[in-house]
Length: 128
Image 1 (cartoon, rainbow, N blue to C red):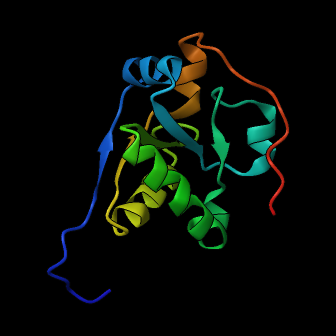
Image 2: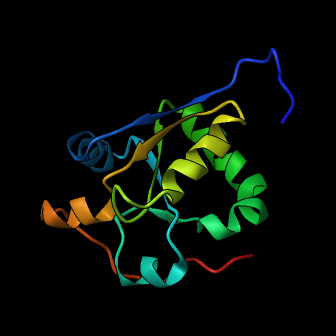
């Protein structure tokens, strides 16, 4: 990517307590970047499945969701399995290049589960 003078977005960390508060208040847009198989096993309630492998195919559609969420004052969060899982950070970096501020729940769903927080079990949304 060539150098640019344009201001880019950023990716920032978010911890489980802050994410839980935002999730409970509905003041967040959350993307699960794991593969659909794992999303179908369990995910944070209200999360949208956006597998990191489908980033390019879905980015146009997700741009609209992200812009609306940010305009509504919501935070945008991505997560995967745990601290050792790079996919959430990789997706966040790509989105930051699109001039968004994205929050990474780096400790992932493993920490959410360990904390005993609510989980949803449902099939992933079908691609259009």
